[in-house]
Amino acid sequence: MDTNALAGFHHLTAIVGDPQQNIDFYTRVLGQRLVKQTVNFDDPGTYHLYYGDEGGTPGTIITFFPWPDAPKGRRGTGQIVDISFSIPATALDYWVERLTEYGVAITGPTTRFNEQVLSFLDPHGLSLELIAHHGTQPHSAWKQGPVPEAYAIRGFFSVTLAETHQERTAKMLTDVLGFRPLQQEGNRFRYEVGDGGPGALIDVLSLPDQPRGRIAVGTVHHVAWRTADDEHQLRWRHHLLSHGSDVTPVQDRQYFHSIYFHEPGGVLFEIATDPPGFSIDEPVEQLGTHLKLPPRLEPSRSLIEKVLLPIRVPEENAGRSDLEV
Picture 1 (tube, one colour):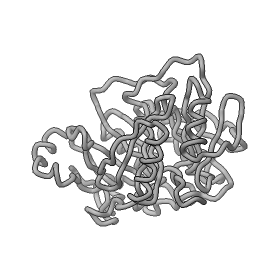
Picture 2: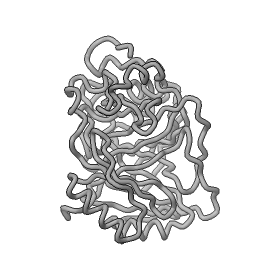
Picture 3: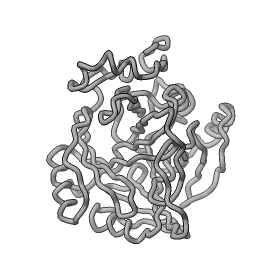
């Protein structure tokens, strides 16, 4: 693998409604650990909630901006329309039963690229999938979570983009970002990056006659790809600028550094560094149990805490009873 290549997913960020509903679903139903509660650095009156494995390993992290009063989004082109998680092939029956017990309407299992796909919506309409496959799982499970380790989610499998002109997106993926064409089924085109496999896959749906989507509650805001460190990220920024991309300056997100740009269809991409990670301001055993703010916002903590809705942190996060925040 080229040391400059993207290494797959870093994280994915979506927009949802009520923060407690979001916490309860992703921790209690899907068995993800709340690894960081902070605020949207560009809009500190709202939470930014991060979920993942025990330590918030890149490739397991899904994050949310909860905006309770925001309108519903619309699924369409120019969007990431499906988020797919990886589960072991033997876990499919478990998840059918578990989601049904929690009253989650499921579709499938269906077959795609010889993999079993279970589809459902989260409480705010975000389209999710569990992909059961026989290949190596990209990450370990959170052992203290409510889902038995043998069946637990193991990070991302893939994301699906809906595009009006898929060939323009494909050109950027292959010619600029280093993705490789892998498979095609009908109007679905699959690409891989880095070492490939689960956690390094992107599907592009060609939907030339579909209306454009609207980003709001129940839709994906952006997807972030991994790079090793600041040096590699700067190389990527110069590379993107040389290809005419609208790439931003480096942004300090406290737990990683980021650059942002749009692919030709309009989906917001990010390249994020692996370090410094989520344990820089609280130990791993306490991740997600307290509101964390970057130094520049710390003087405004009391005001921010008055604006944010109270939330309950799952007891599994720190091995004790629920904490009122």
